[in-house]
Image (tube, rainbow, N blue to C red; front, side, top):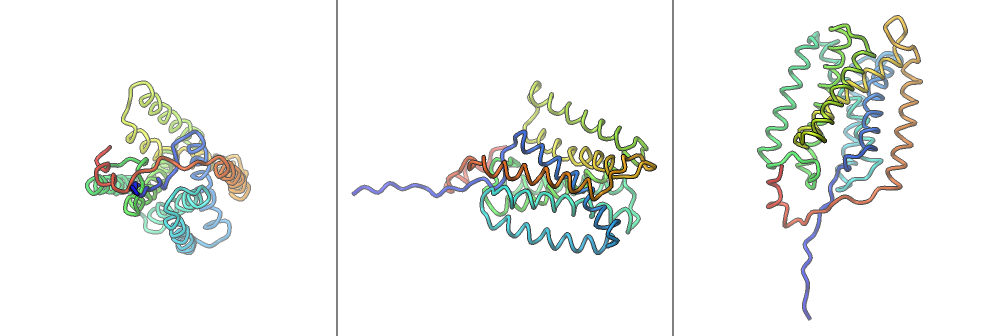
Length: 267
């Protein structure tokens, strides 16, 4: 009898980049901004306690996410929402508790993100999100995402507050930059990986600006809906989208384990 050897396969552990992906990501970063403000300010927990609490919850969420070894919408998006909150808190702690300026914070996280990408590429020879098949690659992926959220928070606050453009103008500005990136990708064939990560970084200040616009009091340039209403609104949208994505989700492309060594050179 002839035995046909089939190489084991690995499923990608992150979702495809679709309209649904960007919509729920925008909701998640918006909620990350308002939820962090609600916990630290409205509940009176303060930045330090809120940061420790949410970091502990994030660690649990990431342990569960890593345990899946594949993309499972509820686990993945729970981790995204929590890392959005923690990323906001990291930036806020540096500025509010340690007195680091927003300019220095933005530069610092830019360097940290660049170093993360450099080490990721040096080790894996790819930054593609379409080949997150191993625990090491997933670790690089989530570390990069943490820095994108922290960087986006600092840049958004810098433009809205230090440059005094206000929440609405800041949101429109970053929305316009993302539109330019989309045109550069679809029309002028900008590198797909570069376009993805630029858009991923910039959706953070875009979402945070509109989150602040909705939640902050009118005297501070917001619409005065408050952090509770705003957070619950976006949480409801996120839950509905995750349910939808869970129902329609199909496994992404799989890669034979034997091809992992050869295929790791793609960019």
